[in-house]
Image (tube, rainbow, N blue to C red; front, side, top):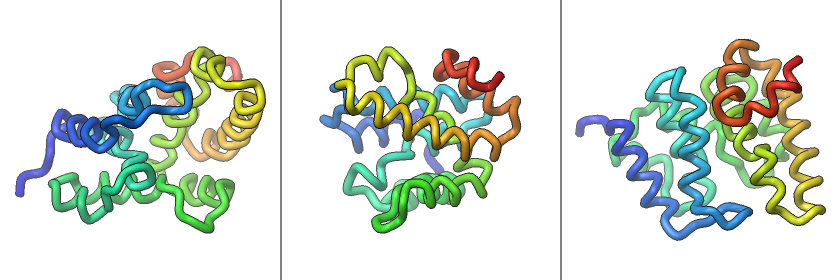
Length: 167
């Protein structure tokens, strides 16, 4: 079976997340597309992983389903690395992600999009504060695990307001 193209993976992500909305009520596929856009300078494989980064967590699809659909093995491996596992603390998951370059870049882009101020402003105050603290703590783990130029590139595309944190 031939491997899927980026457009094929985008369609797969759109189908998998059909009818789902994010915390602010926007179609969920918009989030994964924004994350993928931040990884465009790093190649198609990372864009594919970004498009699929939540499918194992938030849809009935499995890693085997992705492989059977023709998603490249390396992309599926990255998606698995960024997928929350029951019983694993978020902080432990971040530490594991930070050991893998591709997973780190996907999670940096995900974090950057989740931290967009205009999106956060649509949350209630308690959720906005809780998530802001969580995402700030995640950046303290993720950003040092990547080259500063890579972090700047991703953040500059996905959420330029975070560039101030880079100094």
